[in-house]
Amino acid sequence: MKTLKIHLIRHGATDANYLGQYIGCKTDLPLAPEGLNELRLLKENMDYPDIERLYSSPMLRCRQTGAVLYPDKQIIPVADLREYDFGSFEGKTAAQLEGDPNFIPWTSGKLSAPPGGEDNSEFIKRLCVGLNKIVLDMTEDGVTNAGVIMHGGAIMMLLGASAVPRHKPVEWTADNGRGYSLLITPSLYFKSGIVEVYDII
Image 1 (cartoon, rainbow, N blue to C red):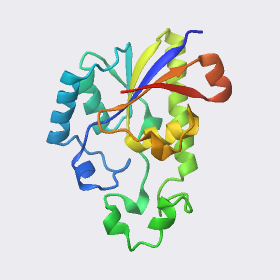
Image 2: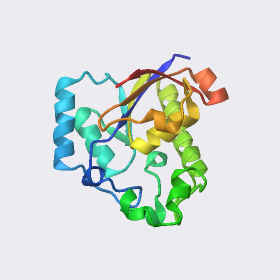
Image 3: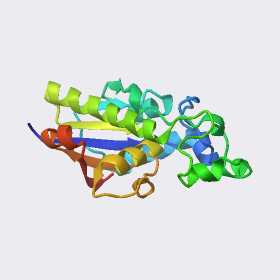
Image 4: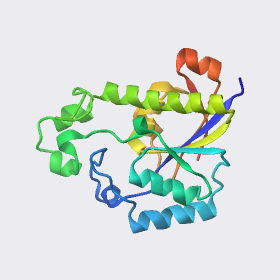
């Protein structure tokens, strides 16, 4: 089997990103006008990876990002790559949540899910399922180079769980329109779930 290249790219900025709000899978925001302009400037000034196929979270901000960065590619939505469910934290900022007794335990990892939200381990499992679907689709069709438009937190959690070199999720942060390039050897991946990060976008 050929080695695959998969490029994880964070979507452009929304108004909620500028406001510092927790926006997950319950709020399908578009990109902010400033976010669109930032993406267009990045596209003009950066060499984004050449790809054969483009996958994306089904959420609008990701699909819009894909259309800007790869306008000639059909976007293939992958439902399992949608953003985290922040439960009762949805739409709020860290400052607004300071008085919530569940907020600090959640941010410190002592609480696995926000009230009414998604368990962290289930989120990671879902993301891994989504990546696995992409790898299977690529291998079945002979595609060796693909882009994936995702959410910042999703990239962090996915790479924290499966990437080498090993880092904590918080060390896999990516700015809007940026991300990481992965090498995946299917025979190794299907046994261990391990991916290798070889470049920064």
